[in-house]
Amino acid sequence: MFDPAVPSELSRYAFVHFVLTIPAALWLLTRADVLRPVQLVAGAFYVVLSLTNIGGTLEARRWAFVSEQARLGALLVASVALLMMNGLVAGVLLLICSSSLAWLWRARSSFVVPSDERMDLHLAK
Image (cartoon, rainbow, N blue to C red; front, side, top):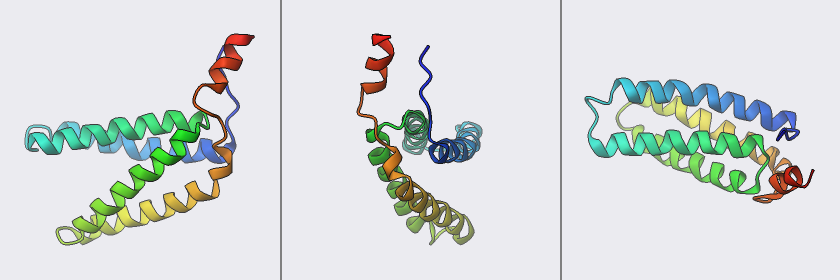
């Protein structure tokens, strides 16, 4: 059975971001009929990337740390662009991004597993 030990800080981080991603995905699905195709594709990509990063975070993969920084950076840029249209939403997103980046940076030493190391250990047993 593949059951890696997850550092508690990464587990909490993944849980919080899962809780934030699901409502975003549901919002995207409910707005699918009014969003332009490019907005729908961008939103779907962001949701898939978020869920992929959550999986990588729960396995403490090194690539997940880099990918998650890029995802949060993209959200930060989108938040700044959104400031002109909706200050409240942009402010909440900026707060989430900045606190998530700080949390991620504090937990950077927990991302220690190279891409296939845990699976190799599992298959060797």
